[in-house]
Image (tube, rainbow, N blue to C red):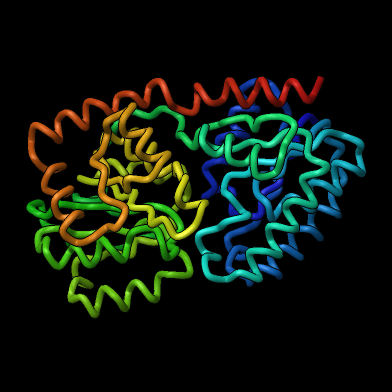
Length: 363
């Protein structure tokens, strides 16, 4: 067996791991993926980590290369690579040393950062998801080699009809259709529901936008707080908590949006320099975006004007103004046209970098 991918995640919902595994298999390499089931993903973090490490230790496969797809898989990946005397790669998909969800939790963040730094000594190559990330990570850890950049982009797909606005049944895990008028502007967020992802500022702006309906595709720890906020603001009847879906179902839902939300709040260094996959998913669906004016996102929008930048303060007034710009017909047409740039950014392009890196370490 050529490559063992390890991820403390439900792989059916983990685009980065799923896309890499498929790209390597398409290149003729044999790949095994060890992740977590959806049931395991509901456990507390320490139990998930303990269960995952136990499962990896029990493996009998003999890979030629081990790849940790996140920090939480790195310890098990390091042990397994040492056991079989093979190279170890690490996909640092986030700045784990400065995570958004750990903002204000200094002790937890320091422990995690120390753990990562210690494990990095046995990593042969680091992978990141943006050019600015590569510069920051190399400097922060004094790495002898610049990290390899593999963008968080989806494989190319054509825009397709979406069930969001129609009377067609939604995917099997969602039995109800959405009560959305065709006159409503449908804004959407996809991803894990954490504080700092722009949902709270957008809900506050919805009080100024009575014709906007928000669909949140995903789940996560901040959902109860945000649901309460929507009630307090009087917009709960215009917010649909769709839930998490398998990655392969995501594109059809995204195609039903009028506007995609990428309103990252700069609560940590990780968020400050984020270039998340949701932005590329919106591009693939031809959906214009609202995007926070942060360094990596700013650079992307300048190169590929697929959305409107919103001041990092994310005030209701600034979000309203951006929404009005996006929905102006001539602006919207230009943004949708720019979404065609995804042809040059799709995972088929990223796969060439990924496969070359893997083959280098297999040799």
